[in-house]
Image (cartoon, rainbow, N blue to C red; front, side):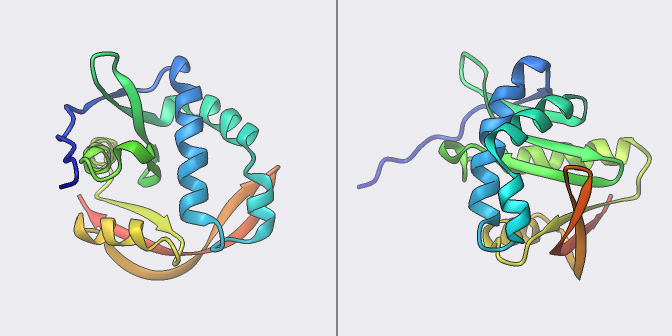
Length: 167
């Protein structure tokens, strides 16, 4: 019989500069899982480990981290800009444990607290795991659009589904 992992006690807090390296590692792994084969090669080439470290450090002020265990290990994060829930990632070892749901609920709360009446996010069509998760969480797919991913000051259009949720 397979071992069942108990649900961890999940803590949420604003990210600090000390979290940037953990956030970058989770982001790089999760981004590759959800995007390889589904986005333009120019974007894949630009998303190096160093690019995730740089962006994680720059985005600390927009980030909430999920922590678990006695050492309060960072196991996931969410980034928000205005009404956009821009990044939601969970460490591979903690997927399916409720971390993503806790992060998404916190993002929704913070977007609403910022005065927005709805939140939105973008998901590439091939990221079926994320798309199922957002649907189960009450988000509605409004259809396809081109998301302007920024690469070294330029934009690379990435075909995505726009999910929205009234708050």
